[in-house]
Image (cartoon, rainbow, N blue to C red; front, side):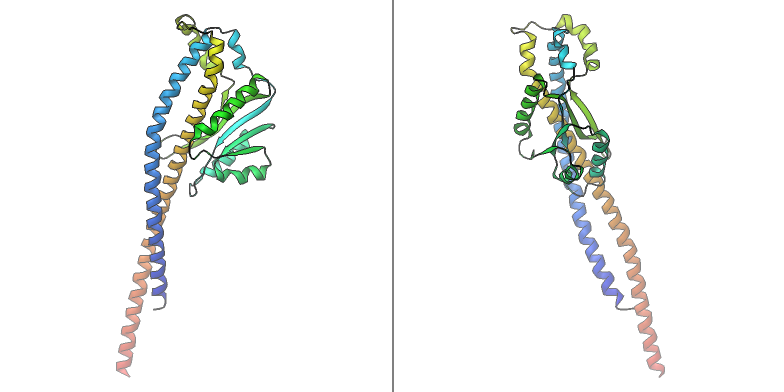
Length: 279
């Protein structure tokens, strides 16, 4: 029985070391999530301002600008802001499920998140890998400009996003959202009052829209990228919290087992001493 004691002690030390790592990772994920949450709040406000400006420009000539609400028969473009971190619980699997459900033939995917690349390879879908670690806007802007230019030539038809959406400090969902063509239902109510309250402009609305729309789409993409980064850190923090709970449970069970082995070892030694003295 005494031989079990070193084994249990080694396992306890190993689990304690694992617990230190998972606790540190939980704290790091929590700190990142809080930082991203503050940044996301600012980005949402900025995008709202841009949407107000977009409504004003569209309201100048509803009939002429109706083409921004029409989808052609060109290639579909989708940006996927997926996981780049490990140990994020079901975050990756939920992306797999949402992508599988939302996939449409003829879609070209731009994929951020190295952990999703094997999935696209397996599916055989057309994709381009993106690296957005340093400055996402510098990478995304030329892609948005290319999309908009191709859309005007009817070579591309729509722009969609697959991303992680934070629901609370503990929960998230993986969603798909189409951001272009624009949704007339989202802007319809604004037309009624913006049509006669839109400010005077030196240039015509169509010319302003030409330069404004790529910037608007870029801001939307960046917002979804930040949202997905926050959701991933929420998922990782939750996974590490659950891992820490498992560590505590294992240590509790092993401590009980260790105490039993110690007691058995002491009992055996006492028995041997008594047996020896009697002989």
